[in-house]
Length: 420
Image 1 (tube, rainbow, N blue to C red):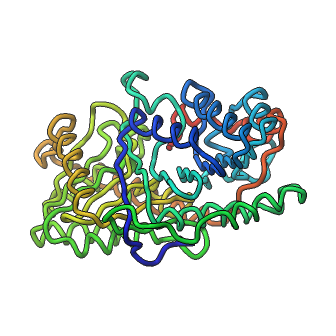
Image 2: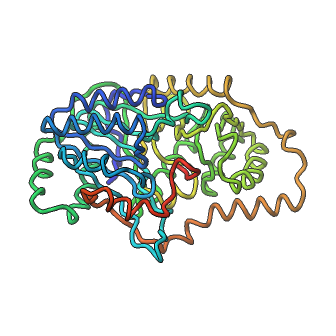
Image 3: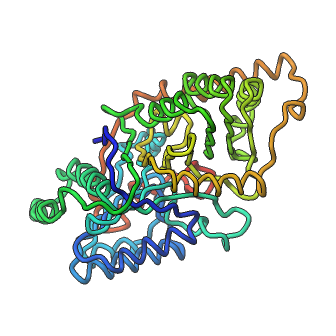
């Protein structure tokens, strides 16, 4: 379910890092009267996860309907006590089913529910890239992540609300029949439209493995093609498709100031190898590349000219563009664009190193061949994985031991090197 048109009249606020994001989400949940829906890739049982747990339990105990969906790969280590107390309070916990195992191992760990969405009372929504883990807070130390989300009020919230309910409805067959009426009641209570709250036009754009497999990348390409002044993209994992790369080079060659903010120290060796080829292509076309080295970059944001911007969960790499379930909000608003532009410019000035062509040095034939192989492998391997099963979220058994047995064993920990 994708919004195919601009929805006018929204108030959209940029939230940078956990320091801004978590207090707003927890405050909205604390004030919820009817319903809370949370979708996240990662939920860790650390100080942030425990704060979310407390807020959800308190909401459920006062009669709020609470649904939480996590990814089975991203959140494998939740304890009996954590899951049990959620279930006992009335919180309905769903998991994106990683499917059957082969000899105890997951064979489809590349397919993930990577969205990060919150909807409260059908009136406030949050969309972005921030998970519920302490590594999104500065006091985590040098490995604290740099990331973004948005808080939304206005008519777009109704669209996001309908989308989250449609994903829950797909998993209703896993849910006891006695609970079906609760979902219908929430749908009847939810507003069909919301009053205007601001001046921003916006749309929800999702990536799935059915009708909307390339929507997010397509919207990026359209915006780059239309850009006349500037393009700034800050993305943690940047290995887009060939057409995307072509649009960036064409924009730079026609005089658009194109700037990329990328990870200075990628956590996957093949990414660094493939980047040699990517950097040379882009720099020759006039694209400016900045490496963010202050701490890990986890953001997925961009802006074009002085109105268009996007914030969401989608990286610009094969996993996000070809396999994961993702959600971005695309915004058309001068004030929001200007604020994001100021934040990204400050980042480039204070926390980034600009990559200069001469710094890359001469490239040997072997380096070209190695980078060519690495780059094209990173682009093509999702196509080789299309045989993997595609899943919808299902209700998590109330006993956390069942959860860990199904999802924790051999799944790996998302905080130990897996991409978020």
